[in-house]
Amino acid sequence: HFFGNLHTEQIATVKQSMGIITRQCSSLTFGLDNVGVFPSLQRPRIIWIGLKGDIDQLHSLKKKINLFLKEHGFPLDDKKFSPHITIGRVKALNRDYILANELKSAAIHSERAITLKELILYKSVLTPHGPHYTILEAFPFSIPP
Image: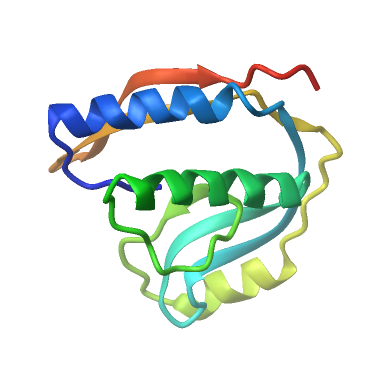
């Protein structure tokens, strides 16, 4: 979830709530699925890899987070939750049809499992050279798998 600018008190509320939420969760396991872009092949901005595996549990976790956000007056994002890993950002394309063709033929050949064991709250600062990320706190899941 992207929060935007937060005050110190809001950060404390997020930290407290994330600690409560993660103590009620166990780790989740995923595999890599398809490759795609947001928002569309005609205007690609984000290149991503989809996930498969414990997707229902991930949606449940997202619902818990959204409930917390709503209860504490944080704005909710209307976008559909689409579990993925961002692998790149597109700033400009000279020939977008090349990217579209490559993505259509891309295949993931990994059977390696990815285990989500914690949620991490990041601070991001935009700079002329791109965003700079700092971990504010990690919240490990407490229930054994």
